[in-house]
Image (cartoon, rainbow, N blue to C red; front, side):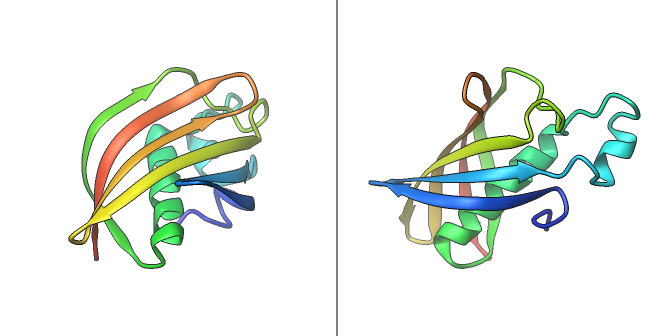
Length: 121
């Protein structure tokens, strides 16, 4: 789990079928010491894990990432310039499979856009 290490959830807003998590990155997280020293960049895998953890919060249970059908990284996330992010998730469930459309952005920039499927643990 990366919550409370890599990021913290400041607030969650439900907008009809979509959830929006407002998260704050921790620039002191150990991840940034190796990715990269003196020029920290948020690893894509950590951003995908952050989405997964938000999906678990919505579902109220542990989920596994089954597949990613689309994942576009359109800009770098840095903890100094982008400490507050908006994780938007649209999730539907059918027979224990969760179809997810998620994005990570700030006020001006879209960083990640993803379509994936999660399954119950």
